[in-house]
Length: 220
Image 1 (tube, rainbow, N blue to C red):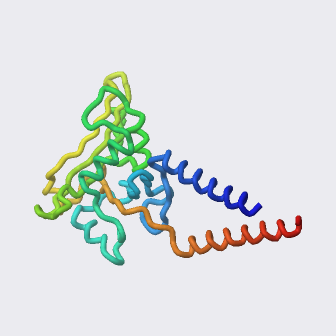
Image 2 (image 1 turned 90 degrees about the vertical axis):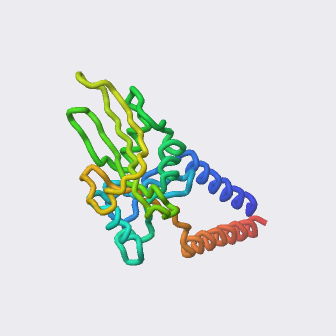
Image 3 (image 1 turned 90 degrees about the horizontal axis):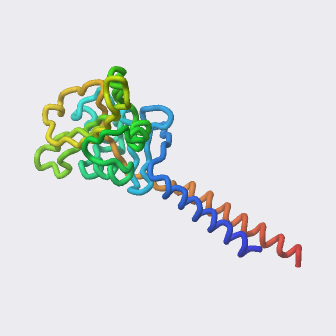
């Protein structure tokens, strides 16, 4: 009986990990940061959390960087690098850089996850646009770049189109407050489970094992 219980526990853990791995991008909520419900997109493949673009809009690149330190509004976060934004777009979300003559459903899904920063009723389009750290090494003063996903659906005037772009070297955006349609690609490593959670899991496992042992004694 004890072996059976342990086997079921292991199977449940494997099933849980497998389900998470299958869903590369999932929405979660972290009440410690701006944005409300589903304010974070967790990439289970790369192990990164992405804060919604709408939770960081209307703030300059320099001002938001100053809030990364201890006690700041965005403590624990940083600007994603160009490589990380590229991986989010291409590897995790399955997008193709450049322009396509279709309304890519994967692009629409990504915009829904990270937040719609801009809509245009005339063009029938939605966009997710944010600043990233285009020089993570700091050799050029950590210049900001712009990463964006724009989807336009078919209308009587305009054909469907998807644009996915990563634009380097936008130094003028460092001190300037970007337009309302622009946020920031903020990233952090997925937090490790707390020691308290691990303790509870361990105690629960011991309790299940002890219960199984008692039942075995009663049967014998």
